[in-house]
Image 1 (tube, each protein chain N blue to C red):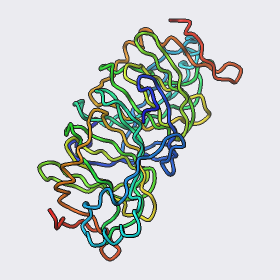
Image 2 (spheres, rainbow over the protein chains, first blue to last red):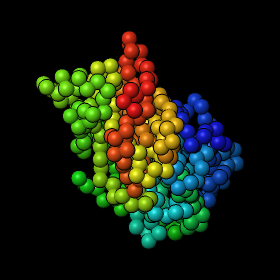
Image 3 (cartoon, one colour):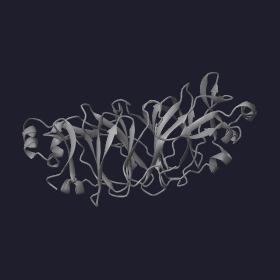
Image 4 (spheres, chains in turn orange, blue):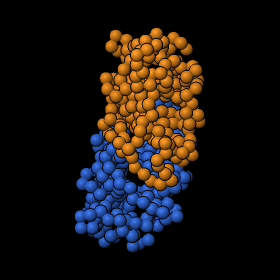
Length: 191
Length: 191
């Protein structure tokens, strides 16, 4: 989809409360598209027998992948769990690894899981009214630990690209789970 | 000021209503710092005899000017007029001209005045909940035409740099004024 001329100024609405635009369609990620990423494969299979829940959605506005352009939009992670693991995005490195990304949380609460190629990692809290800087070199995954949709406005270099493969193959070193009603960061047993 | 380590993830609060952070200081631009930019120099002199009004402020967070980093923050343009010309930012080209910028308006209303080196220009409406794409190659100036502070969250390539000089010398081809209570775009008589 590319409804915009990125050589001309344009505006696009994103509701400050729920992040939604009335003039663009979200890209949707269902459980079936990321089923291998959750730890409890038995629960995943069980759920997929009857249902294919929407885990997250985001706007891809078709920004050309040119130096100097900036891709932007909102992302919305729905509330829920697969077993005790919170709904999350696939997460990705940028293909040009040393490119940053900025998030500004509009609603909800959760965490960003960050990890670089050397295995250095960090979780950062995301909450309404907080900007989050994802530094160069860090894969990032958004995790919704709350009861409502977690939504954030994001901006990154349009030519940064996305590398999902590295994360799909190896996962993150850590996972974020609900243990007796509390958010806990655990070692990924499948790493 | 550089209180952040840009090689590590960090968060910073920006109130979703007024754009203000409780943990950073704004850079402030007073009339005296941009007095030549307004058309009615007599009014400017008159005002500066007794006062030096705050026109706008913004957060400079000290992002290193490296490829792949992103500078971000909020900008707040106060409401008011110099003669019939609305309060506005200085406006600037990026030093690397072909770099874009994204604004997401949190409060208030106004316009972005855009102009490239070939003289192509456009005004785009800014209002709460609208993202604005400033394309590569366009100088941009934010203008507050409303009664309250106009505030927006912004992101741009940290190595883009700012070129204020080109605008300070020549101005924009057009100015935005209140004519009998209505916002009008007029030719800049001083161009």
